[in-house]
Length: 122
Image (tube, rainbow, N blue to C red):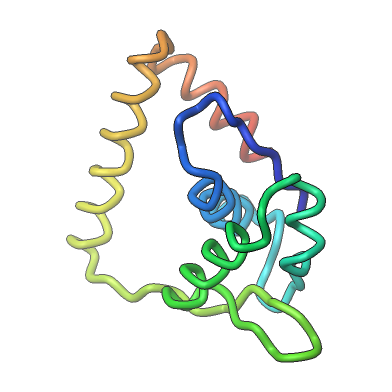
């Protein structure tokens, strides 16, 4: 997994790490049981304070996305958040609305987003 930061986005670095783990999981770039970089290694790679990486990993652990085993590393779990169909649809609609609004503020159209999502999924 290759993390990249956008320091001009206004999104906190720890949040960018969290979002990238979720995106990699959703796209299949990483799967259950795969090992993530150590806190120290990711901090060096991204040129950030290790506490920033700790914060991101801790939040991902609290939500059940990651698990850390002392001495062996941090791994993606296979845990899936259970939701009813209506809750699932409501959450998806909320996320899509936020995404479209944010992209619109940056000058992108829905067609731009569709093309980008199609390429992202390949």
